[in-house]
Length: 375
Ligand SMILES: Cc1ncc(COP(=O)(O)O)c(C=O)c1O
Image (cartoon, helix red, strand yellow):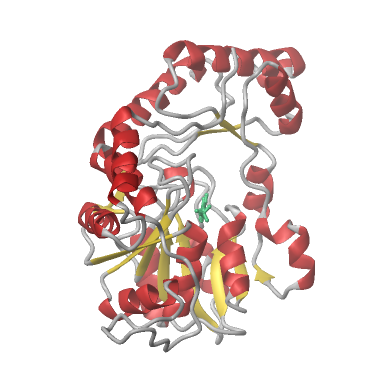
């Protein structure tokens, strides 16, 4: 049995929707873009959604629209996908890495304040693996210090906290639709905001800095070519219209994993999230300390089970040798980053696949590390 780490769910209706765009000849900046943006905005209950060609582009344009510039400091977790740090570096800003909290693996609000300095301009709250980060607490801290909050919900479409969707609470929310995500547009991303000025600026920047007025080819900013085609939007629209059943399916898969791994007491994953909703992006497990995670990853790979070693800490990436950054104590980041293993997770995964993965994980641990008490 070969089990991939992730796999997009493409239905016949998705293929038909994309084909219809091809037949229409409106491949870009057409009705599907508008419909997708409106549906994203309605789903998150925000005023504006601007679709772009990737989550990273959305982060870059969001930072530009907020006026983040050379030398400004941005607080963000090191335990995250490198796109977040890359966007900060691309803006010429200085990443300031904050540690994560144990249990949620999201940035620790108690460790943020000590990192705020005179050049700090914003905090990027990442809802890692679809588990809601305490955005409301971080937003009140940010307001107190006059900082912007960007919520990176790229892994968390549909996650909820305090009765709101992840991505809708901060000044800006960022979404991504790569094929391993809850919904996909092939490649793609979106920025959501309640600010008309930010939305207008991002619409202008994604299209060569061109003014959104009727003036033909009037360029007022140094812009980019970050548009998302109507083909991508048609795919994303169909998927977004069935998001609730996708999230329910993924929740059921997570419960199934929980059952099959329950006997293994030393393997930690998320507990319940009582004040909101997890949007399951993957199924991460924290291996017991002392276990060589990479050895388990390799062994599972040899058995045809693809797992993910998310995330190597951003501050340790080679690119960071040549750029300025600051950080606080990152001990939890360092500990978690070498022990997390993300198990296969996609809508079409079946119970027998999960059973096979869990049996293999439990056996790999029991054989190599009897002290780890694999069930
Ligand atoms: C937390 C986070 N931010 C940003 C991104 C960037 O998205 P993209 O790959 O679409 O550029 C990702 C992608 O996986 C992500 O996980």
